[in-house]
Image 1 (cartoon, rainbow, N blue to C red):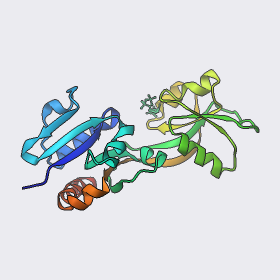
Image 2: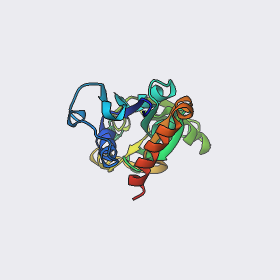
Image 3: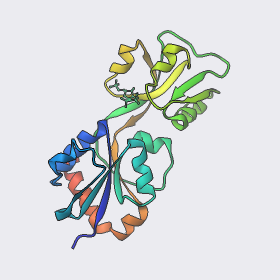
Length: 209
Ligand code: PRP
């Protein structure tokens, strides 16, 4: 009998692509999976349990071992150093982290303000550039910050580029490419290696097609 496995899935924009990938890999996700408000769903025949978490929290559930594996964005992994294994690049939810701001503007010489949902990524990027900046942490709608005068630059995810465009902002630098990754709790990986490897193989076959 397969050992029981818990998978942490990100709610929101990654969810659809992740569910689609799992279905292609022959995981029989129930139809109500996509629309339900339920946070825990089980596929008894496969001995699988899915928990649905905020994208930023998936890594936390996996790190604490309450989920054996999870699907998390590389952006989250770059922002916080966590004790999890990164097993596979799922090549979904492709986007990148970038510096953006109002067009034709230079940042101040003295401690410019940078707004971001990714304070650690932002701070290490500007440190590498040799610039001393003040990071302002926001939780969303980051593009608002330069428009309203809260910050001179933002560090945020760019996917289609539509949000920047519609708000009259431009990109100044690309920081890192981002895709979703399959991650695992190190202890789960040791104890349930066979089961987890089987999942990696099933997904890798689809991803690398
Ligand atoms: C993300 C990101 C940008 C936007 C980029 O925000 O923070 O705002 O998507 O996508 P685009 O390049 O396709 O326009 P999200 O929609 O996740 O919401 P948030 O602003 O609450 O973070």
